Amino acid sequence: MLFQVRMDVNIPKDMPFEQANEIKAVEKAYSQDLQRQGKWRHIWRITGQYSNISIFEVESNEELHNLLQGLPLYPYMNIEVIALNRHPSSIRDDDK
Image (spheres, rainbow, N blue to C red):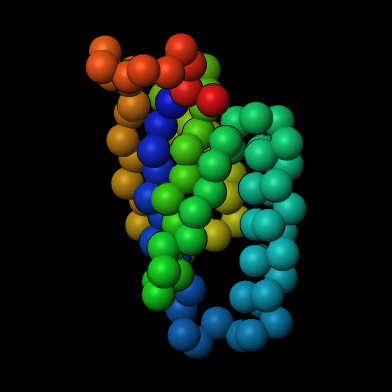
């Protein structure tokens, strides 16, 4: 199953700099591991915002939910998920 996920990050302004940097480092390692596994297929930064648009390929809604909840920055995110389906007018044989 493919999903488009928009993540808007809102780290509290009063969070100590060192704590924020540590969370970001753990987040980066977690996200890169999911990318290597093929579950987090694409990630794009949204220009001018602390946000991204990502494409996930997972087995179920529950798997995606669990992966997103595992993000160290999850408590500081607003997340929007859109399920994707192949379009019948696509000229591609696959979506890779």
